[in-house]
Picture 1: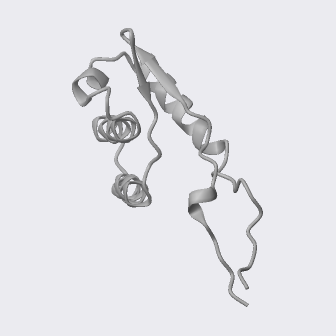
Picture 2: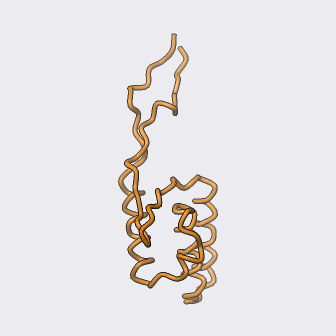
Picture 3: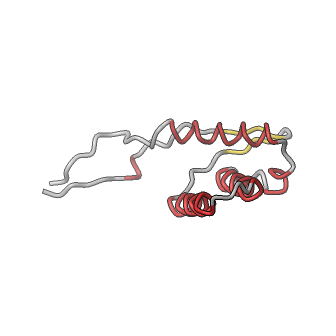
Length: 110
């Protein structure tokens, strides 16, 4: 018996949109490779044991830039800390909402 997983049948998560300066920006899912890069960078910062706020903020901006690429890094860097934190919280809540789920039960092919 062959088991078959059709990723094309997975529902996409609810679309998340950030409105900034009158323009809407659709949140893009973070690819596994980008997530790994972010985690490696965070681990390096933690291992250094330094309270390097600049490096942490730079990493936060990078993460937001990856999921909202239409905003642009210059715009992200011009935001207040409160706005950047709100975007990060919004992004994390979206990730915590769960992975996509299958529209149909996965059936074995005969």
